[in-house]
Length: 99
Length: 169
Image (cartoon, rainbow over all chains, first blue to last red):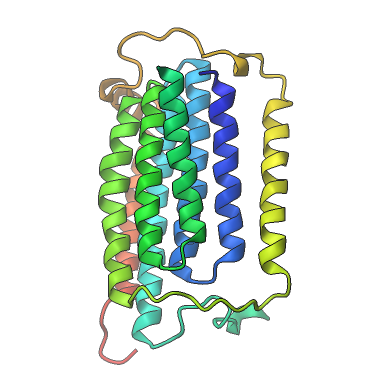
């Protein structure tokens, strides 16, 4: 398969993830959609690494995985903290900072 | 054979992604994301990056998704109500998503990268194996490697501070 197939697939997955962030209101699902977008970026990085024929893009992908793991940990910590304080798990109801 | 595998994995990845966006129950969303991640691991294998594929399955589909499953089970996977706070949101969002896809595709395919329509150069047998990646990580990319380890430590401490049980919050 040519590399462009992978790149187009990754942009499609990125668009689906962005659409999910626009549509959904549960913070957990928004975090899941963020994962979709990060993984789409990873697919593009690995595809370009194959296209160039060196492994540095794969190192980038691994660093992106680390950043994604950190984001998940902090995000889920926030969700658990929200739940403990009996706040609604709905990003439209949490609008005090909206200005 | 490679094309069959690619399209099967691409269908799995796309179906998982659409499942995450469309399923009302967050727990099913987590399961759909696991399907998505496994399909992406197959795609990584097709791109000759065995170590990234293994890390994807072990770290992502294994550890991170277990964390998600625990949190969804803890807060209760209630389905979100289907009212529409911003008028036209459900109609506009797919439109904007489609526009983003078209834009990204034009940006990539319209670039003058001639190697895009090739399979990439021939690679040796060791391309993308743990030895090569580890050598790169510990030599050329040592600074980002250490920085990401500090980032992980900070995230772990931050999560404990955020979610830990205190006397009075």
